[in-house]
Length: 277
Ligand code: PDD
Image (cartoon, rainbow, N blue to C red; front, side, top):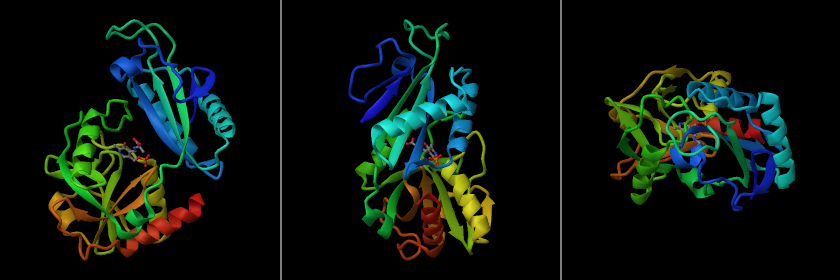
């Protein structure tokens, strides 16, 4: 796949990143995953805003403004020859001999442009299984940091139990998924955890909130327990790559209601498709 690293367009499997790179050695950086539909980036301003917020939170000066990142993204998209793609953008504290303290060097910026990571159509039609897992992450989950070890371990554990996602639980309530936001539907209202330092402010979450408003479906930002999730009428997760994905089953085989995707998730997804398509 086509990639970008500090001013050069390269192939993503070409050696390009020096060993003494802060992302490589420390995970000292932040990232975004942006979806481009038919050549048009979806909610790009929101993604770039979040990237700059994440960078500021870790005291990282990216060395590009929004316009400059947009230019690189546009160029990479064009050169990739793809019209539907997942664009990965990463900024790290640069290339310097390994030392925990901040180096005096420019940030590294890298990107990749890859074809959509398609979710099997069957998963979307039937809904997916999830596993509940303790949320073992730090307390700055609103920062889209490169440090994803707890997320990786939880998602791998879920996958080994036949589940697409691990739903994280902290202090008795659901925070979010390892790479998604989590929602339930009860008595016609959508519920999801409020924005806080414990979750990532998902861009797809913003889109879903807007769609819910349009469709006059109440959108309540209030945490819920795993038990409330089990007793919900419907559940779904959202992310840039999964869009709106119905959740119907837990790792122990228990079902949410009748174990079929519900009408609210379907309506949100259909509307989402008309916006992105
Ligand atoms: N992950 N929560 C977490 C922890 C995430 O990593 C993500 C996205 C989301 C959903 O955010 P958005 O709707 O902006 O994609 C929520 C990306 C897709 C990833 O790491 O691949």
